[in-house]
Structure formats: C-alpha cells, structure tokens
Length: 339
Length: 270
Image (cartoon, rainbow over all chains, first blue to last red; front, side, top):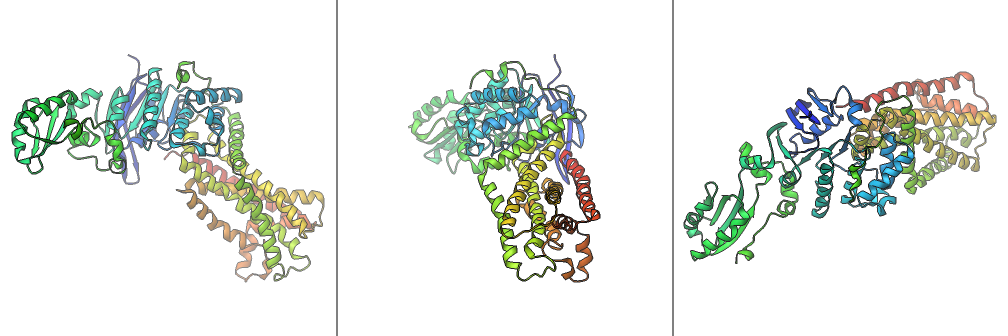
C-alpha cells in the first residue's frame, strides 16, 4: 500500500495559554477524502493551517505528499491547494484576474495562467462573470472562485476548511458536487466541517475532533454504529397512552426507547428508520390512538457528541443561527404525512 | 461543471525557488495592487482631492498668520505639504496589508510557492507609484497658486524624487504596523500614532525656531525636518550637500531597518 498523502502525528499547538491542538493524529490515504468533523473551536482550522504550512506546530510532525511541512514548506506548497474558511478572493480584481494572479505566482507564465484561468472559469460556470470584479459576486460565486483559485496548479492534495459554512442549500449542494468530482478524479482531499450530513455524504473516512484531539475515527458506517442509528420521534395526542404505545413499538427499536409521559413524546432508536415509519403509524392507528407529531432524524453533530463525550457540542453556532440548515433534508415525515 | 478540472495533466509548476522570483513575484503583486486602484476610481479621486485640499487650506488659512522670513509662505509651505502628503500616503500600506490579512488573501499567498518578500515589495512599490502620482498633482496645484521654486531643474526633480522616496520608506514602517494589526481600522488608527508627531513636530509647516526650547532639538532631529529642509533647499537652490545626503541616509536607514523586520513578520508562522 502506498504511503498516505497526508500524515499528522501528534500535532500540538497553543496560542498563549489556549491549547488549540493537544496531539492530533490524522491520516489521509492517496486519492481519498477525509472529513474532519467538529464544532467551532475544536482545532479544525489550526490543523489545516499547520498542514498547509501557514502555521508551525509546537510539537508533532506532519507530512504532505512525502514532504515535511516544517522543513520543506515550498515543496508542500507546490503540491497543495488551500481553500480557507473565508473566500480569499481579491474583491477588486475580476474573477479571471484572481485566477491569473495565482497562476502567475505559481510561475506558470502569463499565457498559461490566462489559459488555465479561462478553463477554470468554464468549469465553475463563472465564464460570464469572469470579467466582473469579484466584489459583485454572490457568496456562492465567491466560494466557487476561491475553490477554483486553489485548483490552478491542479494540486494533488486539497485542503478545504469549512467550504460550505454560510452557503445557501443550493450553493452547498453545487459545491458538494464539485468536491465529489475532484475526489473521483484522484485528488486527495482533507475537508473540515461542522455538519455531519456533509461529512457523511463526501468523506471516505471521518475524524471527529474535539478539544484539540481526535476522539473517533472511521468510516461513516463505523461511526454510526458507535453513535446510534436513526431516531423516530413520536408525540401521541393523548399522553396518558404513552407507555402503552411505547410497548406496542418496542420490538421495532434497535435500542431501549425513551418515553416521556408528561408530553407524550417517544424516541425510538431504529435501523433504517424510513422503512419503519409506515409500520409505526399502522400500529398506533391499529390501537385506536392518534399521532400528533411524527418525525425521523439522523444523528446530528449533537448526537455524535452526546454519544462520544457525554455532552452536547454546545459551541455550534449553526444550531442556533441557521436552524433551517440543520433540518435541511432531514424531516422526512410530518403530522400531515401521518394523518 | 465539466470534467476537465483535474483530468488533464498537471500544470507545469516549477518547484525550486530562484532569486529571480523576488522580482517576477513583486511585479505580479504590484500589478495586482495597481489594478485595485484603477478598479476603484473613488480612490484615485480621493488621492487627487486630498493633497489639493491640503495645499489650498494651508496656503490660504495659515498663509497670513505664519511669518516665514525671506520667502513667501506658499513657497516655504510646498515642500512641507509634499512630505506630509507622501507620509500620509505611506500609511496606505498599513491599511492594505491589514485588509489582505483580514480577508485571507495573505493566507492564499502564503500557501503558494512564491517569494514571501514579494508580497511586501510589490505592495510598497505600488504605493510608491500612487505617491508619485499624488506628488505630480500637487506640483501642478502648487505652481498654480504661487509656488515659485528658484533652484535648478535638476534640483527640482531631485526634490520630488526625495519626497517620493521618503514616502516609500514610510510605507515599510507602515507595513510592519499593518502586519501586526488585527483589522484594517486598527491599522489605520495605529499608524497615525507615530505619523502625527513626526509630521507636525517638524519644519514642514512652521520654522523650527518658532517652537518652544525643549521641542526644538527634537524637531531638528526629526527625519521629516531633515527631508523637508533638504527638499526646500533643492527647490530654492540653497541646498547644501550635507543636508541632502542626510535626508537620503534617513531613507536608506528606515528601509534597512523596517524592510527586513516586515519580511520577518510576514514569514513568521505563528
């Protein structure tokens, strides 16, 4: 087996008294995509900055494409592409000039830089906007331009630091498609995210990071087995029948159901929840009871943290500032559907 | 999105850094910074109006009140206004660097296999060109309202070069502050802390002899005073070689200290 494209071994980094990384180990196999999942402040960005030579670690070692990030930063820089958390585009330059600037700083020559810029603009559906200053671009267009800028040299290893944070759902899916294609074309990618569904969709393997440490690592399936399965949330119209209904559904549950008599809420951990919804409704109906609410959700980042650390990922602003985003695509059943 | 993003062979990116990169990368960065000025016509308009405003305000507001023996105030004032304006122009470097840092543009540059010093050399060079433009605008306005240099044409050109280069030196001081500031607004505020006393406790607007005794030696040692006196001498044809050399020595000295310091700060990965 070939050596990993990215290897981090015991990375430590402190800012003053704040310990950002407390010994991070990461490994990304050639041509694969590692999702680094964690809440704000977990150390994701610090790790990416060390791997992309922007920061020097206090301890530990990191190799990218066989080069040590501290000893051979130029060799690493010639191999990587970096898309940071904030679109690093020059607002005064046009989209084309932004890409040409990167090409020229990569010493590709002016003509080759322009040709590559035009090629990337076409690839990212920015040809028409290519002659406008980037300050006129929408958030999604900026992110696409930023990603294009990190691809000018056709990097073998790509770092994407929260590439979809702050994007609307349509732009987010468009970006996912680009990332998928890059991975399919053989680029090694390390992507950080706060969103479990993003890691789930894109990553070959996921590293869950918290408090500057990797607290779990594995494929999406492996992690899910550790984190619990789909959860069916039910609220029965008559709370006094909660216990009875819970009993009726007990054999469908993958683990012990949780029932709350006062509100009539039942949480039912299940395998393949979507397939069971009809059965759940049929049984409750058959008992002559009424469903007030029915929903299915996948384990969220909060659930991941609850399972791994026994506490919620409290510092996740996405949960409070973009609630619609967290629900996006997850609410598969509503009371209307059950009625 | 088509399939060409990665599928084609890798672009030819030279791996080994050569000294020539400092020059080519600096030219590229300067090109990028000049485009920013061209794309913001408002900046050019402000660059044009501000010095004109200063020339007119100082000439007509203070002109009657400040007694400058042996020479009329506009002719006395112009070298001071030149120096003050290029020094203020040099503060653009701090704001520009801080903005690039804040927006992540510097992160992109740092992740590229380019010459690190080029980001600073290109930026300060672009700011020098901007200052040269401003100096030329002010020359025209000054001549229109009574600036009457009596020295040689060569002295006149040398004086303009001297003040422009002094602005360049201030750009390097300014770059250090921009690289350490957390925001562009903080950079803007911080750079004026050294710049205001430097500019006003000098011979730029009033003869040093009119200042209180304790301030006089400070004002006389102030590099702004040295540069103003040297350019004033060159404009009027009364310059002595010692003052002119001292002025150039200050420029070389400021760049020699602050340029390596700025490059070191830029390269530091912490």
